[in-house]
Length: 84
Image (cartoon, rainbow, N blue to C red; front, side, top):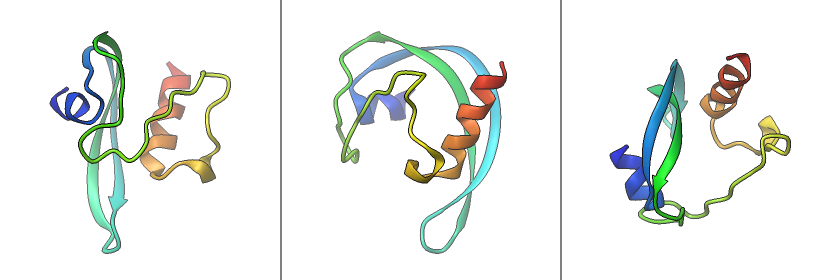
């Protein structure tokens, strides 16, 4: 919640926990453990802040393709959300 607030300026409420996803990050391929949640914005308007270069919202029927996503864990998170 703190990280999302720093990067978007929004306060959220978590609705559900979808699971953990292992991925890699950076040139060295460091492993990451990502906690995947469904949440909604309670306060604030999303803006790119902190270390975010760009912030874009997509409708659920117009999501980017896998090749357009920066991280594999994002594709996995979207698949977990579709399954619920």
